[in-house]
Every structure is written in C-alpha cells, then in structure tokens.
Length: 399
Image (cartoon, rainbow, N blue to C red; front, side, top):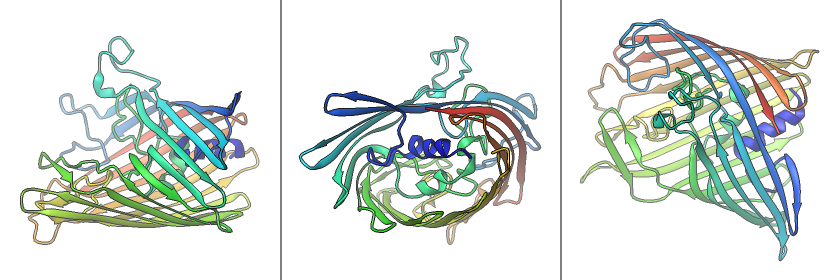
C-alpha cells in the first residue's frame, strides 16, 4: 500500500497528538500552523442473509422482518467515516501546544430529502474529536478532550478493513453510518471518549499512555437497563516499535452500579503484534474481558450484577503484489460467556465470527480503490445461528 495513504489512515483515525499527526494541507497562520486533513470514502455494498434473526448481540444480519427479503443494498461510508479535521500546532514557552477538532459527515442519506433532516436515526454528522495537547519531547505530552479511547485502539488501527468495510453492522441500508469492520468480530470498539491522558516520550521505541476517561454509561440493552458508573474509567497502553513492526499491550478498568445493592467491576486486557517482511505483513491480536461485554464497552457485560467473561481476537495476513495492490485475508472471532450461576437466555449471542478477503489498490498516492468480501456468522447460547455474505466495491481518498 502507498506509504502516504498508510500514514494518512493513522492520522485520520487516531490523531494521537499534533506532534505526530501526518500532514494534510498546511496553512501558516501567524504563530500557528494549521493542518487541514481528512478523507472521503464511499462503498456500494450488497449483502445476502441466510437466516431469520432472533439474537441479541449478533453481528450477523437476518432476513428483513416484514418481507422476508434476504438482500440488502447500501451506498455508505466504510469503517472510517468521511472526515474533515483541523489541527493547529505552535511552540510556546518551551511547550509544543496543539488543538484538534474534527467532524465526520456521511456520504449518503436514506431520508426523503437526502439531507439528514428526514431520518435523525442516521446520526448525520458524527462528532468525534475535540482535544488539546501540550508537552515536550523531553518529558512527554498531555491530552485533554475527546478522542479515541486508549484500550483496543491499536486493534482497529491495524485492521485492514479500515480502508474498506468489513462487517456491515448497522449499515445494511443505504444512508446508515459507518460499518463495523472487525468490531464485535475480533476486537471491541475503542469508542470516542472524553479523557485526560499522559503519554511518555519515545524511549528508543518504547512508549506508554495512561489516562482517566469519561464514565460513559453501561448499556444492558437486553434488560433495558442503563447502568451508571461511580468513578472515572482508567485506560492504559504500552507499546514497543521498531523499523518493521510493533507490539503492544493495553487495558481498561471501569466500575458500574447495577442497582441499589449490586455493582460490577469491568476489566479487559489485550495483546497485539504487527510486522512487515518485505511485501508481506502479519498482524495477530487477542483480548480478554470480565464484565466488559462484547462489541461495545459494557454491552451485555453482566446479568444482574454477575459479570460475563468475553474474549476473542483476529489474525491477518497481507501481501503487496507488483502492481502495488495489497491483498489481504483475515479471520476474527468474539465470544461471550454466560455469568456463573446465570440462567442464560437462548437468544443471547455466544460467538461472532468473520472472514474477510480484500484488495486495496493505490490508484494515486492519495486515492485507493477497494474490493472486499466478508462473511459473518453469529451463534447464540441456545444453539441457533445466522450468517450473511457481503461484497463491497468503492474508493477512499485521503488529503
């Protein structure tokens, strides 16, 4: 894959700090330097469901409930939303200071007017980043504001479907928001969280981040209960990088009040590695949680104050052929166990599995053409299953 596009993916997805963000359109502005960056992407997706679906937490889609139609068509963004970001940087009083603000509009809308007003459920646009940073390479940096979470962020950053679609998630109809990629079928979503975080300087390839995060409410959707947290979340990551690879470990800890007498501790850890060897690339990732749930943090993570265990991971192999096209194949799985002593609901998800085969061709140094095939299968605790196949064709442009 073209190195410019690879760098732009990292910048647009994480924007870890103004000091490390990759340049887009640079505008000098007095004491400030403004970097305008982002992407536009759109995919035509056709999905075919094999089964009807009655399962909570499934990444698979089922046949349309009223018509029994098994085919879904959509024109949507992929795993990355369309993105417009503004990062300003300056050096003041021996400190590197920056701000980042971004918006993420959709490229399609299913409402009758086509402008988002007729269907507010499509959440157009998204608002994912607004943070400041300050620091120095001698002692590190501090981030304050809303950005992607610390735990599991490297899982999504290294997912090849970041340039494509992966699992379609809620994007089974035209105009929906972003797809799921490998979220819920290989890793948990890092999400976008208010945070105050400290990152160490780069120590010969080693770097670590620790922070407190906004205590977003847990959602136990199967029980219709919103569970409030009674302290800040804590998330941390440590990684070591070298010329052609990286290894990382991260973790998160939250506490939620279930009812007047019960509270849960939700924790998770992960471990991942990625490396390139000539034109070949390999990524491996695993995670394990207790009370953390599946797909999204806290989702289905407990039953009446009893924590459910979850785990999963993915492996991914890529190879760049002489045309510059990156070919890739990935397998991911996310599992959820019933709590000890719980009478498990037969319709509760047990496992989401995903196969992805993709081709990512750099038509120019900024523009990629993408073709993907995805197969998602969901199994329930009661032994039922649902499966769908999808094909996606589209393009993603970074600036």
